[in-house]
Length: 544
Ligand SMILES: [Zn+2]
Image 1 (tube, rainbow, N blue to C red):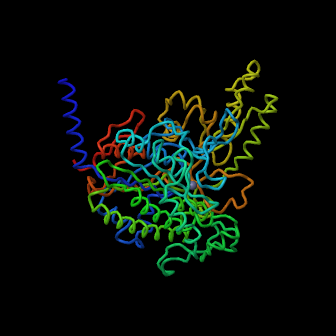
Image 2: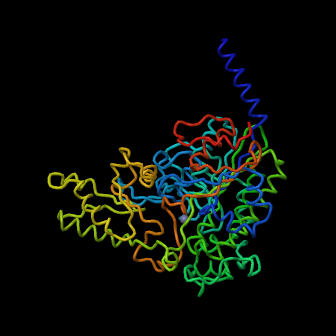
Image 3: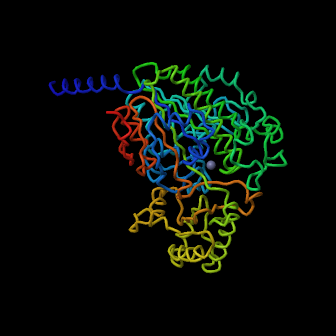
């Protein structure tokens, strides 16, 4: 009895402390494909009340990196919110080859659930492939009355941050222009979201995209050979008549790469806070927002384009508007907000080549065909099951059947020898080596290991040289637009800004890992670190 009383007193004390000091609401913002240097590159055109407010008045973690390969959206969001790497949380890419079905699966695709008020293609998604708990899960398990809402244009951008216990994870329906969810979460959209969809359909946001500022305000030229020309356009230049491009393409894809999609998402965030009564009681709530459009535009236009410069100038104003709304609702000390990104991006490799820098393209489909031929001529049979994300998967059943005549190591050795002669390939690693643990301290191999899951990853993994991108030889415009996924700084170094109650005004220059965000969030709301979290809490940004 005495012990029980002691525990009760302790927990009452703990709870009183939480009530006094914990923020009522935590907002986690992920900007898809935001490189660290965008904070400074576009700074002269930022307002005082958006990115610069967070940089000047909050904690600025200036050396935040992803610590695994590959740096894609799915793994990025999962790692930020689980506080661990793909090796543990299992989201090794956006899509991968599933051995059991021999099919490409999406990291949030789930055929066992159906879309709610969605068009047929966009609703069957859930967090069922996410193997570990998120911060949002931990919050819900500790305080069932806490609320977690997560929103994004991309399904994975909403689902992975919201975790398994979310009260509502909502993403964009490219067919209908509305926000949807799946039967994993609920059987009917809440009334407030039905109303929002009715009044705020994407079509009503899609107007003509002109540059926001005068020509001289931009550092990038509008017309560049390195940008993709959208279907329905003859040049990659302003203005973009988004409504008519959507009609030409019979898709809302052009809308999702425009700044208007960021405005739509900010409006949804503000309404969600109000209608879900977030931050209104003693149980801390969490709202996760992932702005996908900078990534969709970034793939098409690249980081050196006027389009990306304009997207960020406008996103800064969205952030300012959102911060103002938060301060109106919760005062300066009633909330905490952090902003980071799920990965960066490389300059268009063709531009690197033309500028005399290291870079280029590796046409992976051609390489795989060559390996298949070598395999057949050496062993009389093709052992390659498939390739995704620079992972080569071998057919284990076939290898088992041929085990008397062929050893897997001989197949891998043959491939390694061929691959290392190909321009753009830096190194290779066998899945078995990554699984066992590495003896070498090689930075890139260690990152590859953190991104490796023995059940989901391949048998042989490739690392490209800096500045190179994998491409298919069937790409229509291989030298326009760009991507991400590597372990180099341009893909790993992202902004990390914290602002609000309990957050110091400081700058931290020490190199930190993205998986440190999860434990820091738990520290902020006085929750214990979960077993699966491998990051470390960044206590230097928290007031005592
Ligand atoms: Zn991307």
